Length: 83
View 1 (spheres, rainbow, N blue to C red):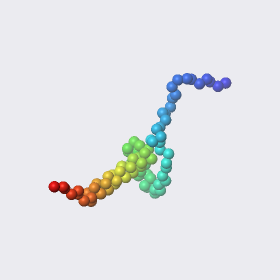
View 2: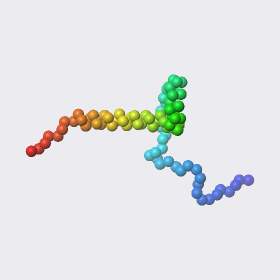
View 3: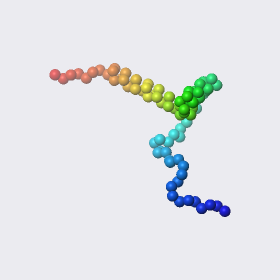
View 4: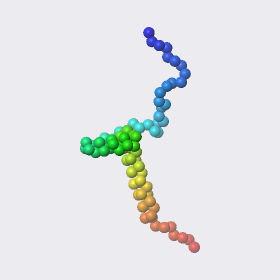
């Protein structure tokens, strides 16, 4: 005999917005020592290895992009002043 379903609020994790859904993956090769080092760093940050690697990689990628944008702005010739 099955139990009748309860009505009302559903329990569990709420759905993730489509823009925030992570559904792509990347395969990274590492030596045993590198893997242990990454896992240790993630644990020290109270994160899973996947979350830690993604966070650190994105921070670095964004810093590189910001540095490149600053350099490109500095390389542009200054606009001429009109008298």
